Image 1 (cartoon, one colour):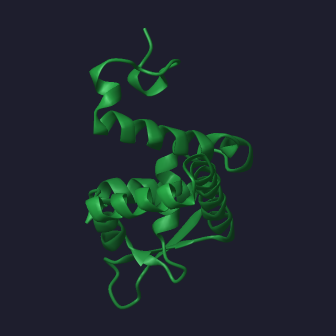
Image 2 (cartoon, rainbow, N blue to C red; image 1 turned 90 degrees about the vertical axis):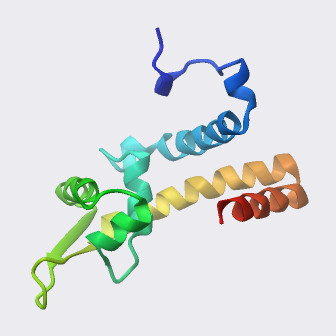
Length: 149
């Protein structure tokens, strides 16, 4: 039996045809593109790590703020940050003015990983734009933006 996260063939049936299944298939394609050569270049990173790296602004962010944007608990996000720090993708320091506050910044390696992720997503977007045509692709983007608000 194959796990839900490691399906060898596309699913068929009702799940594959409703909007959640269709959006899930699109997201699966993006994840596959990000992870295609990831382990060679950025060992140990999963899609969730790339997502977190992209959320961190150039001047850094507080754990609390990142957790809110990521819709995670502070503890859960802190565990991700600790992992990324052990691998050298981020660094964190306590603020001198408030030792309870932890500021997280990407390292040069973290910047490279975030750029890698963005380029992978751009490749998928270019493919979809070519496949759908520029007008339909832009309509898709606008529709998703509108629905997400």
